[in-house]
Image 1: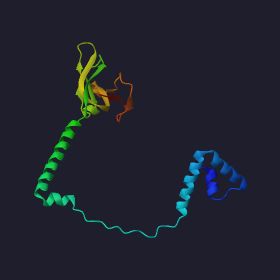
Image 2: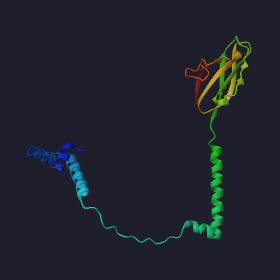
Image 3: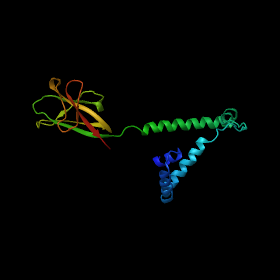
Image 4: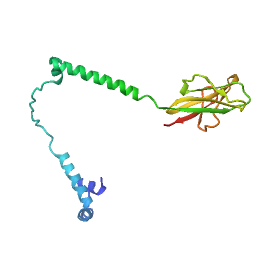
Length: 185
């Protein structure tokens, strides 16, 4: 609220300030509208409180539930409606299953004899990777759901290694790092 309007409403302006207020109201349509609106609100605030409340009579309406329970056709309709709701619920659950994509995990570790992977997309189950010939590369293809996932490679002797191709990482609870994979469809 404009300070000048507030001072005017509270009768705290001197004569020169009142003249300035009237000039501003005359020149500025927006200021005029704001002043008028605030003065109308002040009138409502200062008016007498409402002491008489009119009484209202309501007619009793038939309840919808009575139509379904006491009417044979209503019972049949309610059972049918319930069946439709259940079917819609079942189909909505099936359709809302997470979308996933096949992702190829590859790591170059020619010096080891065993590599596995564990992550949120495997429920932290350890899955072995397959060696690709004598190239030193290990791989696995997994169906990974859409979303954000953490994972790590596990080498022989249990050594955990973050994926060198994924730069987004975080500390895990075992003193190592998890890679963070973002899967979008």
